[in-house]
Image (cartoon, rainbow, N blue to C red; front, side):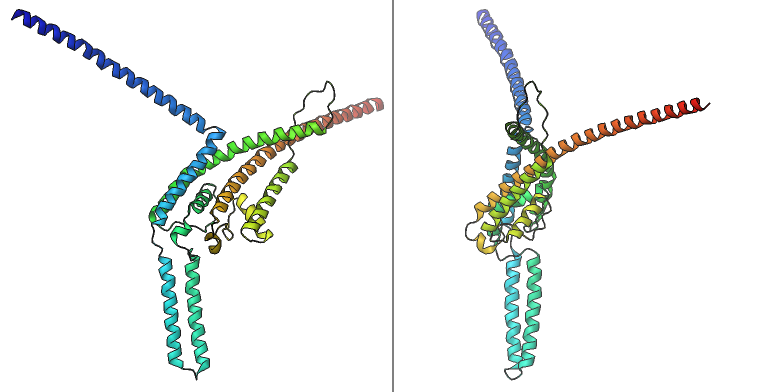
Length: 351
């Protein structure tokens, strides 16, 4: 019996000691996993703050927003379609009533009644079209490229106004989406401007060095990109977009240029928007909307580039003006002192 008790005590002591080790090991592993997760999160945040990360983040943000708006707005019920069909039926009934009332003999009264009915119909249909009705179903309106353009117009603060959410969930999502998307676009605007400004400055420096003769022993000067070069780049980009849109959308060249300038200037009246034509949307122009999305996104980056380069040139010119102004003050001070000395000498000579 005693031997059995000793064996039981030994087995209990052996079973207790590994339990202590097995209790401590998971704690250490758990801490290591936490540290690894924190390190991964730090690296992810650092990458997202870089130029490449911000570009990828804004594209991913627009894609996720487009999918969300498509899912919400496609399930919405388009009441305007039924409203327009009811207006048509109502107008036909009123025209038929006017025919039955006036008969064929009273033509003047018949024309007056029919004109009044058609005017009322025109006013009612105009109200419906002002609310965004364009004879398309919700599936056709909220396609993926159109939703991309809608998300881009939110975060860039362009706001064309041709597409608006009809559901309560869509309106709430628009407010939340703009709240987080606008700061993200500002970060993209700053980082993209720095990247493109550095690249354009390097290209301009190479062209400048190739076109000018180098003096032996001369130090390398700091080359500032002139504002005229920036304006030429923007002009060429707007011209390219105007030609592209005039071919695709069958717009006038003036209308295409007008759309490019108002979009890149973030005015966005919404009177001209790519893909808004009903016939064009039914014949597979969705890839054109994606190209327009890329065109506007890159164009806004070019605007940021020109902003950075022009700001640098203005700083240099203001510095030069300040130096010239200080030099002018010094010269006037010296001249004034010389004049005072001459006047004193003349007075002493007279006395």
